[in-house]
Image (cartoon, rainbow, N blue to C red; front, side, top):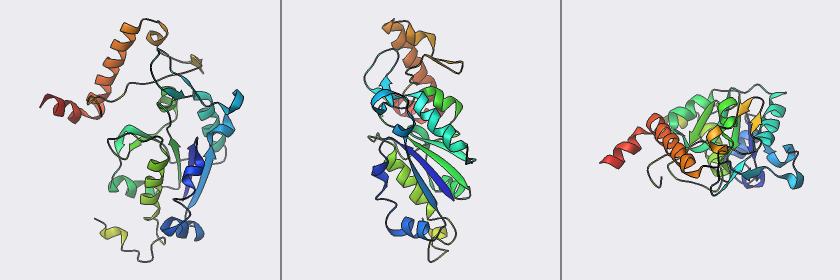
Amino acid sequence: MKIDIISVVPDLLQGPFAHSIMKRAIDKGLLEINLVNLRDHTTYARAQVDDYQFGGGAGMVMMIEPLVNAIESLQKTTVYDEVIFLTPDGDTFNQSMANQFSMKNNLLLICGHYKGIDQRVRDHFITREVSIGDYVLSGGELAAAVLVDAIGRLIPGVLNDETSALTDSFQDNLLAPPVYTRPEKFRDWQVPTILMSGNHAKIDQWRMEQSLQRTKERRPDLLEDDEA
């Protein structure tokens, strides 16, 4: 199995894969892990990969162009079974999901950072969105390490006892709305007009509506908990 990981700070992932079971899997040639520095794929000055979000608000957003450049560069040599974005509002990672992923050949993991990634990357490239829990980390690197560890140990031949794996046993209760940053238009993928209006009251209303819609679709239990 090959797992490529796009990160702004790939050095954070050196340690988790250099020891124990993951190191054994790599040394045996059963698992290949390729760390990709997102900054190597930006055309902006000073290796910029983030920018202010359209519509205003606190927090920076990972830009679309460096991410698309990195993804498409990797896709030239690898056909991915899944392109996975690590995000708090994704599907909650569990053993069943680990089992499914362990049967794939090639996975691409994208580590979020800052406020998140431009929504257009999620719309056009991501095949699965995965969360390791209802909390926020500084970046997706630790979540990526969790996925790789849970998946890697299931690969046949990684564990000495092959039967071992078979016996293993949000502030306001709303998910965040989509976020966008420069450029306003990319490959005919347009930032929602409301975010360019400058009308912050309407922007706030749009974001609340998007948050409610996303929460109803993905985590209705959060709304039930709020009403209880």
